Image (cartoon, rainbow over all chains, first blue to last red; front, side, top):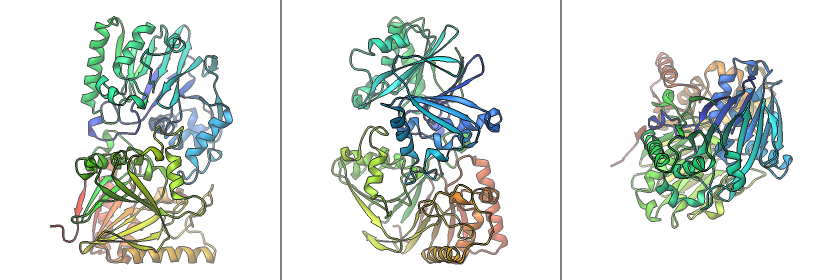
Length: 283
Length: 311
């Protein structure tokens, strides 16, 4: 699997010279399987730039297909959809898999952002490509984009956000953004989802001090990300979903503090990477 | 009064090196009358930083009052609202104005922006006192010493232009609008645009002419005209139904209304800083060639324009 980061920011895009290195776009990650198939995780503003990069490929000719995994429907995870060029090209096919009591309820939520008060698109029906929405059942693996995918919900403030495990040829990538664990850390099921992952992309919105004053928002600090990585025995931890007020120097400091925390808490062997826009990782 | 730009981008925020100079935040302009509370036009992502700055003053004490004039409720004009810090401080007072829609109350539109599952904090949980005011085009009203007037624009679901007169000066905010020549944009979804320049039915020609006249009257003699110039001429020809103008369209209105300064605004998301420089240079050249008496500037984040008596 090849992973690329198109947006690593939480809550709201944060333009400006002080976010140039890590990037200011909201959450979006692409995953290419060894067979060349495309899976997209979350649809923050980074999705627009992924879409533009796909135009010279089969997606520009209306011959592309991809799976979109949606962790949850907060704005910063869906706001890129209306600006994703391939979704307006007839012939392209997208299947979105996300959290919902039913597929039609999930589709209704995505319709809500397109309604004409908010968007000139009026409705998902005006996307030129085929766009199918399917709710996932937690814990039940499904095949998507050449990968075996399993989803489990994490608590996230007043709602939940899905974490996804993507597997191919014995390699596992986990995406766990917007995770607001209770005091005991992740649930047993979620820890099993993370178990032994080659790469764990984990919510690290805050420093512990900031997290302590904003617990109700349902995000992790880098310490909680590191604790989860250590408990699940992952090989590599990728910090993700930085607070919109953190400048590049703040994220540098967050990464360094996370490294130290891993080293003194039994995670010396865990590789640590701070996600940045444009970064590519091999899993 | 002082006019300050906090977000100048259209459609979607665009962080990154290529937008460092003009800025990547979506639409938000602050008008500060001398000795008065801020009047904010549009609540794109630019309003987040404005909110943080306001918290350093009376808003941080829960003793601030702000008025927000919303051109329309498309995402790029309201997406910063939930991140406007003064909303989370009890005692602050916020008045939100936008055009009355036939089918939905303004409060309901803003309530659905932050309802579950889109945002963790619903409108009802905000600490500040928020009052919504629905406007009919042509309406005139006072905010403190400021006289506000408005007229409708040519944009899907309809947008409103605002004029603010105070301190012996005036500013007009005109975003978003298509020119008034090729298509009438109201509430129907238009899948395929008509050809630019094709003849239109007489009733549509009349409606567009009235809208055009209303806008020119609103802009008459203003010190600063802030105008949607998202498109190049080629882009407009491909997408006249998206409801945006070109710098050429803005020059025509500025000329007709006799403005002092024209400010290009609502820059396209994929326009990098160098491309935006070129658009400004070309627009200035065209304006000089036409013998226009007014200045042309381009909005960028952090730009502050002082108008009338300010001391």
